[in-house]
Length: 296
Ligand SMILES: Nc1nc2c(ncn2[C@@H]2O[C@H](COP(=O)(O)OP(=O)(O)OP(=O)(O)O)[C@@H](O)[C@H]2O)c(=O)[nH]1
Ligand SMILES: [Mg+2]
Image 1 (cartoon, rainbow, N blue to C red):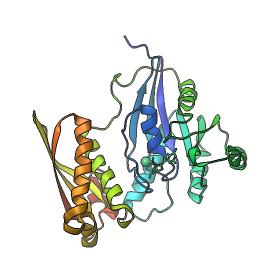
Image 2 (cartoon, rainbow, N blue to C red):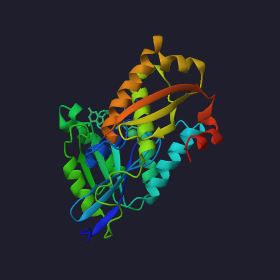
Image 3 (cartoon, protein in one colour):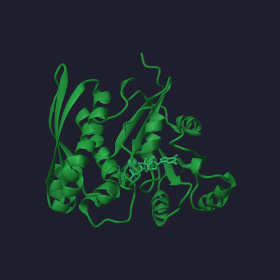
Image 4 (tube, helix red, strand yellow):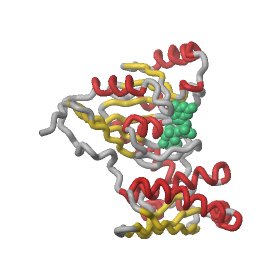
């Protein structure tokens, strides 16, 4: 019989690149959401489920809220984050201790209407030498929004994250267990595989590639000794295709190798991974193309 007495949804909200996905992974203790040094990495809402002895915390990673809304995909990403703010029981408003930007201000304004507990998590404190430097920012924010707690953390080094979890657990309402003990995310293997490939793509191409790529799994065939996977990397222009493939195919090979290793760890089987790069013009601004690629 389940011992769970409290459960609820905790939205991790903030502008791009503050470390939301890194925090989700750290709190759950497993990598369920991809991360990168580039903004606008997360494009979906992704659940990270943490089952404690008496409490089940369901964290929701969200796309970073941002200003640029010219493309349908950007509107879609912001819509997700806005919906999650409305649905969650508790909000973790995440900022970067090293930089406050206009987009943080934007998030702050959105949260003003939220009638629920909001925790301010000031991330990346491992980069701050003198913690007293945070005080002016904290003072300014305190005047703008009522926070139940203000917690400086390092998601990357797991500093103060236990304290954050404790505070969150206390704020959750009474409720039943919503997911089985051993489930850590709501996303299926195909989704996770596509995301791992996209993460390696972002890392390997670094500054060269704009945010207009996506990954589609065409075939996923599990076998006893080998799982065969074919995936398409969609780009918007021929020039981007050349960047992804690289000289003599070096980049694509690197992406494939790094992705394969991580997928093998995830599924516990050998993987044969085929990657294709294809061009679909302006898919990030085409509602129909977005739906076909899984952006509902
Ligand atoms: N030094 C330091 N870097 C961090 C910390 N947390 C995250 N980062 C780095 O910040 C970058 C962005 O992290 P993500 O977790 O992808 O950020 P995000 O908020 O999910 O970004 P989007 O999905 O684009 O909204 C990555 O390079 C992380 O390694 C931290 O506590 N300290
Ligand atoms: Mg993210």
